[in-house]
Amino acid sequence: MKILKIVGFILLIAFGIFMIVYGEHDDSPGGQGLGLIAAITGAVYLFKTFKRQ
Image (cartoon, rainbow, N blue to C red; front, side, top):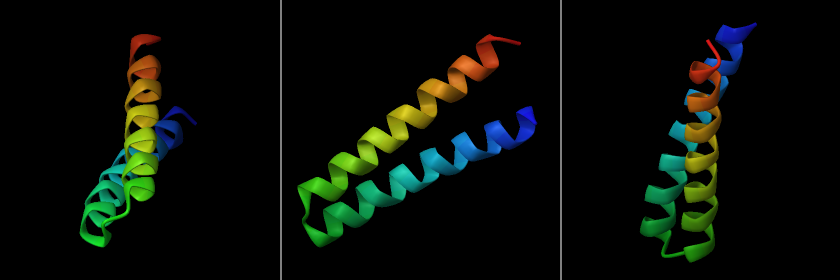
């Protein structure tokens, strides 16, 4: 079950990076902001998951 959490958080980080790049291309600060929030959230929870081991 822990593997699914780790893969999910890695996908959330990747999606956040995609949103940042796409938001810059589309010139939408809202898309960039959501991508930044998603990437930071994924990184924090991934760090917390590894720290508990």
